[in-house]
Every structure is written in structure tokens, then in C-alpha cells.
Image 1 (cartoon, rainbow, N blue to C red):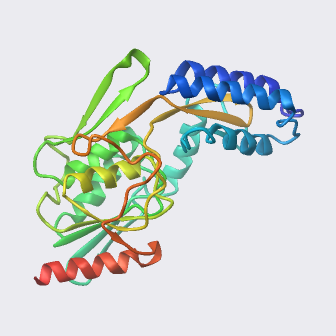
Image 2 (image 1 turned 45 degrees about the vertical axis):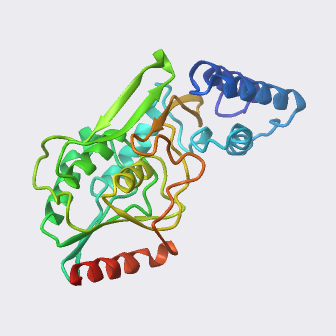
Length: 301
């Protein structure tokens, strides 16, 4: 492990390359990328003094082959723990405590239309079940619902299924994850029962997206869209469909490597690289007003 006072790129690159070849969901691409990183290291491309600068250079190279936005070398201002996934978890906990558990806004608009904002993440369900349940139960009596994901950058797939459970009437197959480790698959379904009250599967539902909407937030929008349950309003999302894990490779650097891929049971594909395409395209700043107008028109009709 390198020290805080001097950045030594070689150990960082060697460990990142090892993690790629052992864990990346696409083994052939992993070999390409590991070779690219080692070649760039030998060329002197990573001879920089700042960990943040190295993170930017390596991330650009990691995403240069297949554009996988989950494949990153992330810089952390504060020193990060060495335990796998701990760096991301610490950062998420700070955001959780500062955002009312990831449901910072529940609002009733004119005409009986509710807005539930889920941001900045869909947090681990062992933390977030209570605030998510409270927000969705409060909105369950609305005539129409707008779920605002414009500032949501991802999170826990189990939280996606939990939220979907409030927006559907029956237990429904939402997504399947295919993992590299053990070459196994894992299906995600909505829950047969939820704490609190469901909004249900028949009242008008709209999901707001932006170019910042990412990862698990994209899955939430995509699952509901593919089921024909929600109308997505706003901008195409960022396009990251591969769940990842993080490893500390330097006191201020974390390598995040996708270990699986998502396959939707309706479309037989996912949103990787292209994002969730809105049903009603508009600027993200206009999406709430647009969805509200659509909801009022549908309720009037």
C-alpha cells in the first residue's frame, strides 16, 4: 500500500489490473484493460503526483474500451478503510443521514398529485426500509404519483424491488442479475407484502429522469417502464447497468469493478451505455411541471 505523502502509481495499477482480471463481469474485456493499464504505466502516462489526477487518468482508460461507467478509480478526499466496500459504505452513510434516509421530499401538488423524491441514492434496505416505507405510505392516498429520480445516482437493487412493491399490485419479476462469480444468476421480484400502504398498480405513475440518474435509479425507472407501469419523463439517464464492488487500492483511491450484469425479463436486455429513454423527452428542469400536467390531464380524462 502506498503512503499518504508520496504517490507510487505502479502498486495502484498492478492491484487494479489484478482486480479487473479476477472480478470484472466481462473476462475478455478485463484482459484488454489490464494490458492497457500496464502499457500506459510503462509509457509514463501515470507519472503524476496527485492521487486525484491519477484517478482521472485511470478512469478514462478503464472506460475507453466499452464505456462502462461503473468501471472507475475513485478518489476520496478523506483516507478510506481497506475493507472491501467500506469506502463506498462510509460515504453512503453520510449521505443517508443528511437526506432523511433517501426520501428528502414528499409533497402534494394541485389535483391530488403527489411527488416523492428519492435522492441522492437508494440506500441499503437495512437502513432505508423505514424512511422509504414512510414516504411511499404517505403518498399512497394520492390520485397520481410522481417519483423524482433526477438527482439519484444509484444504490441498492433490493431497495429498487422494495420501492416497486409499493407501485404494483402483485408479485412481479423485475430483473435478473448474472454474476461472474460462480456463473450464477439471481432474480429480483417485488414483495408479496409491504409495511404500510401501497399506492398500487392502477393509478397514474410518472418517473422523472435526468442525465444524472444512474445505476439502481435507472433500474427503478427501467423496470417500471418495461412493465408498462410508469411513464418516464425527462432526459435519458446515464447508462450504467452493471452492479459493482469497490476495493481500496491506495489510502485515497478505490477501484470499482462491475461483477454482474442486469437482464430485464421483458426487454431481454438493459440500459447499459444508452440509458433509460424517456417516454416524454424534455429538459430535466421542466420534467416535474410536464409530469404534473400529464397527470392532471389523465385524471381529468
